[in-house]
Amino acid sequence: MIFDIEKIRTDFPILGREVNGRPLVYFDNGATTQKPKQVIDAITRYYADMNSNVHRGVHYLSQISTDAFEVTRRKVQAFIHAKHEHEIIITKGTTEAINIVASCYGRPFIDAGDEIIISAMEHHSNIVPWQMLCDEKGCKLRIIPMNDNGELAIEAYKSLFSERTKLVSFTYVSNALGTVNPVKEMIDIAHEHGVPVLVDGAQAIQHVAIDVQALDVDFFAFSGHKMYGPTGVGVLYGKEELLNKMPPYQGGGDMIKDVTFEKTTYNELPFKFEAGTPNIEAGICLGDAIDYIEGIGLDAIKAYEDELLAYATSRLSEIEGIRFIGTAEQKSSVISFVVDGVHPYDIGVILDKLGIAVRTGHHCAQPVMDAFDIPGTVRVSLAMYNTKEEVDALIEGLKRALNMLL
Amino acid sequence: MTINEIQEELIEDFSFYQDWMEKYEYIIQLGKEVPLIKEEYKKDDYIIKGCQSKVWLYPELRDGKVYFTADSDAVITKGLVSLMVKVLSGHTPQEIAQTDLYFIDKIGLKEHLSPTRANGLLSMVKQMKLYAVALQMRA
Image (cartoon, rainbow over all chains, first blue to last red; front, side, top):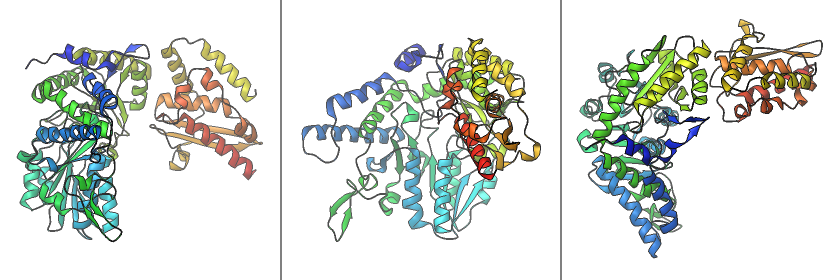
């Protein structure tokens, strides 16, 4: 398949706008991606043509919105190669997906003195839910260390297991460093100890083809808005056997079979984890985002993004005093850096004035910043619609900024 | 000079800069002129929360007037805190607590006043007024 960057860029209306009198250069894709008109139009179409609550009414609109919502579930199933469609839980996002596991797997199956392994490069969303669980239950966190390049130490990881290890949870791609972790190897190691694994796929789903069965991962979480889809929707994949063992997350509508004041019987998968009216429009249009990605092909996207990453890394190396934070051999779409003597925040402000959107700060991964002993970084995160010309604009902007700031 | 006279002077200073780059260069320059906080006060007690960069601010009451010293690890933020010190330092707690800082809008920095801005200009203003009130109560 030919990767037609011109065509792709015209699909994203926002890329045509100006910011501070300059053409927008959007390099904050790790925070959220822009949406193609196929997704934007689908959102409008939903409200114009089919708005109705799902899983309830017998009337026509309720039927078609329910059908459309369930079509997305099947698209997600196919997209990540899950065995069953009821293994796909539609959530608000990655954070909620992780919290469901912490709550519904953690509370019943992890006790005082038990251990949970996470890594040193986790987003706060994959730290705090486990800390809260540990506070409640008296279990302990064990941390997989990383080296100076931002790669996890696999030998050290192996040594963290004990008979008290009950769960492993780590990210596929680091949002702050861009490191791609050897997930398959790490899952296999956990399984040798009989421990289930949750993988945070928030930064992977838009860049890497995922096959949850080939990975044999037990739980997999990701967000719609980071994969060109709407905000407020995400996915928790879980193996049927595990999900069936878990109690519901929240009580409410949709998650029940029968309710009397004496007793409630819970609904089956996936609905027992989907209490209340979901974000229907986002749920449906996530399917359109998947269609869009599949129409281009993740392999083609990955090849293009990898080339762009290499180009951006090499051009940024021209900048005097630059220090890359995260120099792993396997990286995806993220370049984090600091420049000697300059605060990342100052760089971000000047780049913004030039119409260039980057993220500055700790990227919700403060422990990562502490490990490198820096207050934060400038993060350039790429998407399929970015170009070498935009990288050139960044370099020019960065040189101007440093000229002012140094 | 009164607070408002200083505000007027700054509005005039900034009116010479049409270009955002010049404006920011001026702000950075102002940062270099800020009365620096003593190293011993550069600790968490005097950090202003709500900034992506670190801002330290220390108030002192002398002869019934409040004097601020400050610093930041980011030069633009340092310029912003310097601006605030320039306007508010050397006035009575009452004057500081009651002042309306209209110059921020007039010099085109209103965007920095949004509560969600990472530079925390709003937090700086709040903290300076709080210090003023606290010193007034102690006096």
